[in-house]
Structures are given as structure tokens and as C-alpha cells.
Image 1 (cartoon, rainbow, N blue to C red):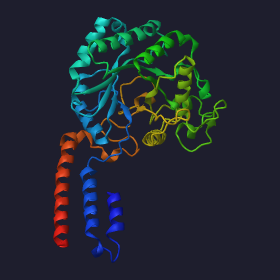
Image 2 (cartoon, helix red, strand yellow):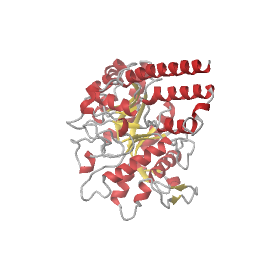
Image 3 (cartoon, rainbow, N blue to C red):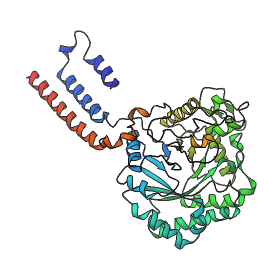
Length: 410
């Protein structure tokens, strides 16, 4: 509403000008007010970012309440780590696009085309088209693990899932990917020298060929936080938090990097190119910063988490690309929607959420202004219905103003 006040103050509230405004200007002002008001309830700072919706917790709100929260934030891309039917049903007939997950322990079964098709028929087909399922992640961070059998099963499982989608005529709307840790890189700096680990070449080369064949992206879970935590005396905090800093320059390309995430993305592009592919897009399936950690987890604070995610969202809103690909906006899923109290490991693992389970923000990054309290979500009117009601009222106001203007003009 600040925009309305500023614009009206310049046009209608100047001394000696109120009575002299032409009818055409009044009509325009009224119409401008109508347009702004009719959209004001739905106006939020949505910027196309994706969010990871993990559920390793015993205190999370119901999926239907989460649907209210995400609608209020205008977040339209969600990534799951399974294919929870309760979540998929809760988002039926919404505008939210889902990446669903096929867990690591299912990979062996998915190498069987018959079982892969059965999984699709049970976990995907029943929810289409009401729920927008656009992609399936087959496994998570398989190649950075130690299970050789799991690594060997990854590509056959992806191929079986894709073949099942083709058989069911769903391949045009549902893609197939897997997500990797940055631990699959042997070199990450300078970005132009990025390369994959030699021991993973036998898995990655056919996998990249498959991505190229089906035109699917290469997903990376990238956390500059880990680099800072491991070497806080050597890694610049400003550099990893997107704050002003001297940056680094790639000596080969002479490209300057003012943050670590962009350098990591371009290092992955270089590694893919080194294996013969320039036709595969890199997307960030996870990135984030913990708001709390153990005593040996340097940098895990609410302030740093708010700065990292706030600055990241700002860059996404600006459609920034990396130095090596400035015309290709970064595509990112932030980790994560909620703190998850049952996640194992250090304290940081349970504190990556943007929100507490009760729906209150962990820190201020500019999203909470449109956030309904989840605990009271049942009392909130559906935002679409609210927008419709406001639009009707706004239209009546606009028509009334026009009638007054016309009558006075006569």
C-alpha cells in the first residue's frame, strides 16, 4: 500500500491541485487503485524459489496446513524426499509443482521394470493431473556414499523409472533425476578446473549420457556452510554469505566470483564439460544454512542463516546467473521448510528450517509478513476466496468512483 500512498500523494494531495485534477486523471487514479487493491491480498514476495519439505519430525503441522502456509508465501515449487500420499492429496488442485522422491532403499527393486511401473502406478498416476508432479528423484547422494551395489543400481533404476513413464505416456510431464553431493567432485577451484572423482567416472559417464538423452537436469546439493565450518580461519564468512567482499578470480577464465555457491555451480558445469557434455543444465536441489549448531559447528547461528538465505533469495529474485553462465538464472531449492527434530547427527541437522513447526519464522528474511499462524490455520479463509471477495469489493468501489466522476463532470 506504500506505492498507492506515494503515487496518490504526488498526484492528488498537492496543495491547490486537488480540485483541478482532470476527469481523465481521476479515472486513471481510480483504475490504478482498483488494480492494486484487487491484488493486494495476494501480493507477496514470491520469487520462484523452490523449497525442500522434509518430514523427519514428530511435531510438524498437517499437510493441509502446510498447503495454507505455502500458498500464503506464493511458493509454487516443492521437493519431497518420498511420495507421501497425504501431502500430494493436500495439494490437489493447487498451483504447486512437486518433485517427489524415490528413497535409496527402493533402488534395487526399481531396477526391475515391472516393479518400477508398479511404483509409478501407485505413487504418481493416482494423483495426476490434480496434483502437479513434475519430476522424480531416484535416490539421494548415492555416488558420494560407500555402497557399491547402490551405486551400480542407480542408473538402471533411473532408466526403469523413465521407461515406465514412457509406457504410461507420462514422460512428457514427469522427468527423472537424481541428486548428488558436492563430494563427487575431485576439484572445485578454480571453477574452470572443476572435475569429478576418477573413481566415479564409470558411474557418471553413462549417467550424464542418460541425462543428455532424456534432457533432464543434473542436481547438486551445495552447502557453502560446510566449507566455512571446516575451515573458518581460511574461508571468508562474507564470501559464503553473499556479503560484499574481495571475491576470488578464476585465473583461467578471469571471471570474478563474489560468493562460493556460484563458484561451486560453475565447477560442476566444468566437470560435466570435461566428460563431454555442454547440453546438461545444473540445478541446486538443496542449499541452506543452519540456525543452530554444536560448539564445534562454526557459523551455525540464526543471524548467519538469515543472512545467507535472505541474500540468496534476493539474488534469485534478480534472476542472476553465475559468472560462467550469466544469462541462465540460478535454479534453487532451499533447504528446508521446517526444523526437523528427529534428524540424526549434529545439532545443525535439526535446524535448517526457515520455520518452526508452529509456523513462526526462525529468522526474518522478508517472507513472514504473509505467513498465517499454522496453529490457527483452520481460522484462515482460503486466499483464493479472499482475493475473489476483495476483487468484487474493489470493482464496486471502482464503479462507484467512476459514476461520481461522470456525474460531477456533467
